Image (cartoon, rainbow over all chains, first blue to last red; front, side):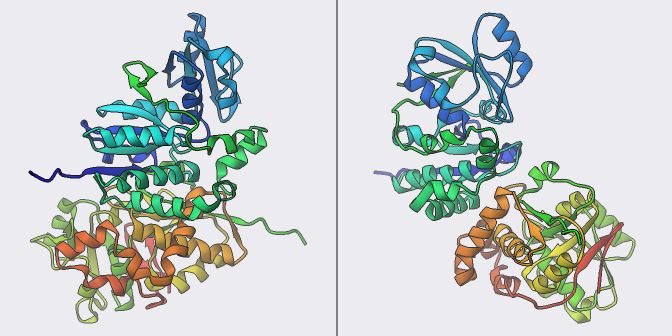
Length: 242
Length: 242
């Protein structure tokens, strides 16, 4: 029996570097821990039907006029026309169950649209870590972990989670890597994992959220395996695989 | 007496992210440990007069026709029209003393030209670490450490050195940072510093150089304080500050 070639896992630390990673047959995992991909996983756990990611506030505003429920913020501030912002705590079962929700955030939505140039885009976070890892191992495709970052600048919280996810894929024995960013992310996760919240305390986004009194979500966003849901992009919207 | 505000140090992990960092009053330190900035420091130590960085092989070829000595390679391979490639070992005193040399490499030259949008560009490497750190502390400017990376992808060897340099600047007490990439680089250097060569052994560029039998330069390129020279960009060429 022929030995199956291992698939590659790579970490792209910022959307600005994505053109060097893009491969049309790969699965892209978008990671925006504080807070977009954590909020999206929470919304599906609480029964949202679809999430429609839009890039600009203008699109979000137009969708609101058409009657959609809209989650929209910029720089952590909820937009006045929106129903709510992107704290996972906003996506309660009462609000979202069975609904379609339009979603526009500072960095996460842009990363989702970039990923759409590849075979498929799924949403990754600590919240759905085990389910997502198992699913990625079960697919016969290369994986690119795309950190949403902060206005194209590297951020710690996404990179550390990228290290956790890449580490899980490599441990499965089905993946290999020759990507320095993957090795660095795994090392950063290794440093952080003993006390993740202490480590993330130094991240810039932690300070931004604290300034707006939004940092109460940080422990929740670093909780592993809150849900088995795996959001996947289908054309214009996200739905759950399972 | 008024307390002087601290200056900022930031690490830009790839030229692809540089637009988010660019500040016209800042000093940019270009880092391309394997091997461009290590070779440039070596050349100045051995008495080169000027180095003229050019981006394209076409420019390098034109300069050769005009009579310049040319160092040029792509993907680690010396170009046929060039006098030599970019191993630091090529820049011997016999060859370079008093000369002007045209220099074109895969990643380093491009980073130098990007940095030219800011106040000044200097060349950083382990080889000139102490002299460079002291000089940066003595200037009244913010510092952006720009990793040349590999075809816009993050690389370990530049990021680890960026962490060493950023750490030295912060230790001086004259600098502060709110940049996640700076914190991550410092942590990577912390992991690596116990045995730098073992750590760098896993880097992708190490394998590329080994494939071409060029990895003999790696220990030299990780030698601290081989020289006091600080190459700086003056218009179209690099010369030494001291």
